[in-house]
Image 1 (cartoon, helix red, strand yellow):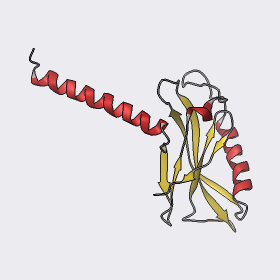
Image 2 (cartoon, rainbow, N blue to C red):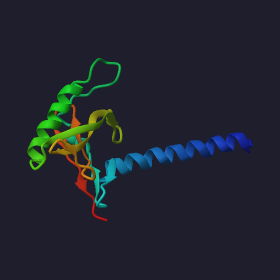
Image 3 (cartoon, rainbow, N blue to C red):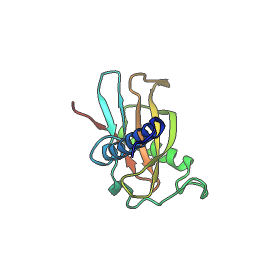
Image 4 (cartoon, rainbow, N blue to C red):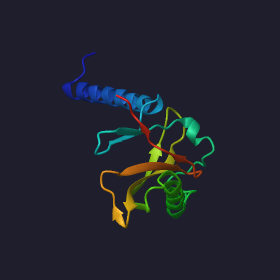
Length: 149
């Protein structure tokens, strides 16, 4: 049976989307970074998540009430992390906070916060030292790892 040009185009589009979705999931699930950044010195870091990271984290979906971990609590966890991890700085200034969904294969989506920061020294932002971390809904912190290329 011969398909019209429109149906053939739709069929190709569907196949492309199905392949893209499968590839994207595989990239995020099979040891690849779900987020990457490169600092001013050219060092590339990545966020590597797996389903194992979320085993103790509560499931939450938008529309079902507030997240189990509030924004305020996530920020406090990030501040505590910064004090322990960045002792040579006076503190950090947060520049971005995102609530992001992570889903691997057929698991339910799990949510986490990605928090971007700038270290502070003598009351000034240290440009070129921008960083970020992930805070899961159970309060655990996932630090970026350097990507060797």
